Image 1 (cartoon, rainbow, N blue to C red):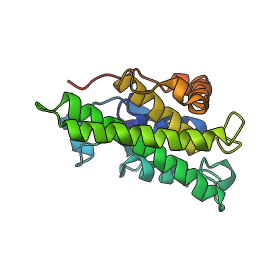
Image 2 (image 1 turned 120 degrees about the horizontal axis):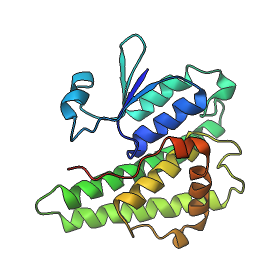
Image 3 (image 1 turned 90 degrees about the horizontal axis):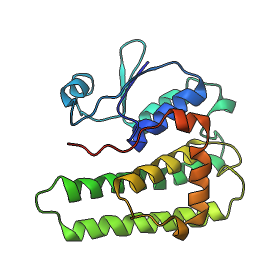
Image 4 (image 1 turned 135 degrees about the vertical axis):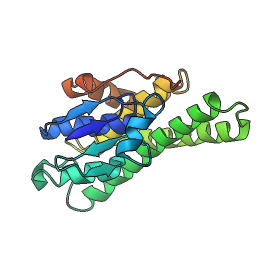
Length: 207
């Protein structure tokens, strides 16, 4: 398989981490949709990352679909998404908040840096959404002691840590770790894992 996209994207990174944790071999092509958009679009007409090219040449686009496909390649007991309720729903909830956080971080960056005249209203709305979802995630994490959110590593742990790092690096000073001690500790623990150190890239602003 071939994973397309740079690891400074939380969406690409969480796919790369899942691939590694599942022990699935893959080639990584760190193409940027800005600098190498023509290459990405030749594979994915949406010109978005992550994009996963399968061994048979078929393409899976967007991280939820990719992770769903990867989950189906391993035995149920190894999957990073629980298969029974309510655990499945609980993990999906945290994943949704985390990916929403990442989305708002991207939207805020584009608004501030890629628009000639940024909208103060939209930027402040993004900041509010970021702080609100961080508060919700902090409350959830603080109520669950242990190194992992749900007792073992899941897609939720990965998504939160990847989003936290991306938003923090794309918007220095926006997230105060002292305001979210449970989240800060969780993400530091995840970043200390070898797979997180291996599947990693500092944020590179699009040019």
